[in-house]
Image 1: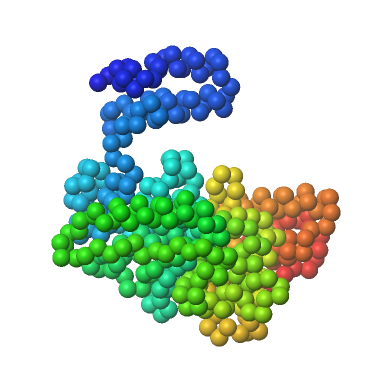
Image 2: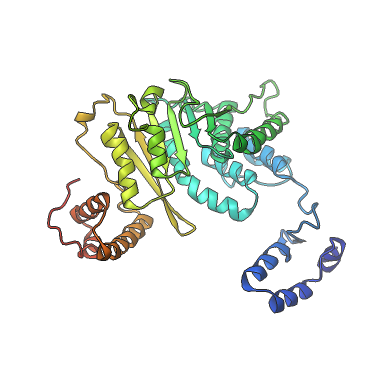
Length: 400
């Protein structure tokens, strides 16, 4: 069927009419929206359209693709399994690693390509950090709780990683095997995470495996309603993940209110904390790092950074100190300790030094911002950063 005939069958105007209409009678944002959602694009040599007028353009729905993704991940021969299911290759490598599974899951669960791209760019570094403890057999990370999971995008992705790992014959025994998704909003869980879980679990029940004698396990995830860590029992989740919140909200959840006798994270007996706050200003990050390192005595183990939609997202991995004696913590690691040679973080430092220069012209810097600038001035082999911070006239510098 020709492109023109296909458009006519779907009730769409001819392309040249739409182009003329868009260019002559619409403002730029509206014109871009129309052209993006209604003009033809080429896919494998066939004309297809993104339009509500034709809901049969893509005959493979997202749950069919999701089943194909997981079957490829658990199959002994990924390429052959992919060819059997919708003739669509899901992975470009011979075997699917956990990041492949998470990425494919988020892509299936996202409403559109733009939403997926932005979500994955932001969540990819955080998931990389979550997977780090699994590479060491010294202290196994058994379960993960996504606190404030909202619609469950991250929690479901982690659950699919655990599902694939348990379904494969060569599973990694040190990879977490259980996931919790908690949120204060029952509506967000019911309409988002729980609804998606039910559909995904139903899709999993229809997956066949290479070994007919192997019974399929259910998706290892539980959703709970609760404020902060209150939805979890002590020892239930030895890894906590919090993303998409402000620094002060994170600290209220982890450290607790000022009148709390015992920090909630200590009562929960968790060993790992992975954080990605929405506000990345140095002042806010130092407040967060102070709470984990100074108040709790936890150790900063690694960091990742992403720049998405004009904002920086710094993900941090903290681990409970073995002796848990706060007085023995002699090394305080500033935000960016593991990112000094990262190009994205370099842009972050340059931007915030220029921005703080403008702030100080109007008034004194916040204490945390001052500490951060002093830290930048104390770094070796960072002469360009020091030149950008030359406006700061305090001769005292902080030590690492």
